Amino acid sequence: MDKVVSYVCDLCKENLSSRQTRHKIYCRVSSLESSFVCAECSTPFSMGYEVTDRKQSSYACEECDKVFYSKLGLKCHSYEHSNAWPYQCKQCGKGFGTKHFLKIHMPKHSNERHYKCDICPRPSNIKKNFITHMNIHDEQKSFRCPQCDKIFSSKGRLKKHMAKHSDTRPHKCDVCHLNFKFKENLQKHMNIHDKQNPFRCEQCNKSCQSKSDLEMHMTKHSDKRPHTCSKCPSKFKQKKHLTRHMKMHVNISL
Image (spheres, rainbow, N blue to C red):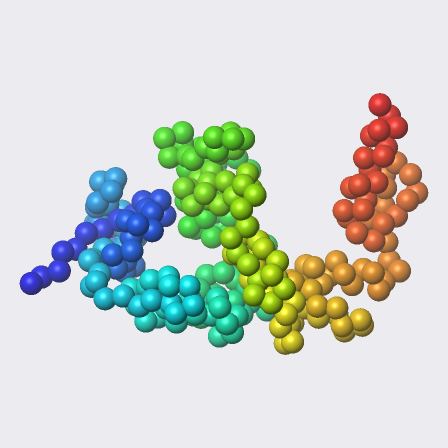
């Protein structure tokens, strides 16, 4: 029996829920002309995904019972429990199951911005993020928070934002039992418990969660005070201390 094939564009793929995609296989396709037609929005496109039905075999994680439809998916997921990522970003410490996902991640640390929005001044160095961002300017495709009225470019980003309005912290550290709202915060926190943590202070051996946290910590070992108040001669080691100090000048002027 021949497999049933359809196509979706990048934008529609981004907005599909996990329930809609979990039984499908998505393979990248491209052509010189817009020769593919999106099954979701009926728009012709030149770069997107070929969609076929996935076989119903599944692989369950023994730690959390989460189900995956490929051995590779289960293997990559297992690193979340062991924190033994085979590929790790040297700049922020985030781990990845494949070299491909690390490569996709690396442009986030680049200062180059190849994609510029014509409506607002927000640039992007990743095409996928730029396409998703443009949803904000489209009332029919944007996602608005019912509590604070903030607009988001995708359903996933709105769902992540809603956690800020909740007191639920579903991600628990198995070592010190701290709870976190977001999985990435837990993953970053786990560096503290890793003896091979690349973000450890060489002067006092303090273990930090990320490169930025380590850089901020290192100011404690320095006499430099690069952040100067524009209202008075006061100087500070960290920007957040200057920001807090500036509020004093606001209160005095009132």
